[in-house]
Length: 248
Image (cartoon, rainbow, N blue to C red):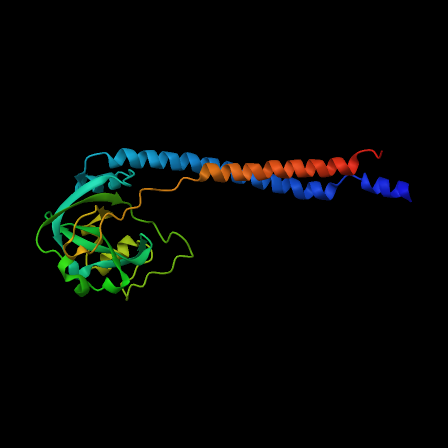
């Protein structure tokens, strides 16, 4: 009886191996993915740093880059024109822990084209333009900020559909925002401009909302996955050793 129990104990643990190997592969793949994400994030942060220190170029130059298929993210740009406050679009957003909206206002440029400018953040109770009339500046203005790209479609299925009738956007559907502001797509510059921080009359909207302090925790995540892989190997090895070692 004792010999049978010892023999059963020494039987090779195939079931454990069958479970441990796929788990190990998954952990290593997750670690590799985070290493790839680390390289991507470091490249993005380096690009942002380089572009933030560059001089602003005319909005028309950014439009040309878009037409050429170039990356326009975070490129400083400037545009001059008159705001069409009556047709501003409202994008649901949070800023410094508060929820509200980013105000995207058509800027009618001197050459007849239109550019959607993210003037900044307002809380929920200031959604309607009449509640912040002081900030609805009249006459020609020059706006300097950072270029932001259009989206090809909804970024994720978990993002709600835009409430076009209520003028509330949950993702930046550029064609819809242009069309529902009353403009022809062909007359609009194909990107957004996030206005830099400025002292708008009345204090609203609050500009300078572009998020540039992006977190970079991918190395920590990679080490976590690789660490779990090492732990799995050690635990599995110890278990196998205890199962198959000769009895004393």
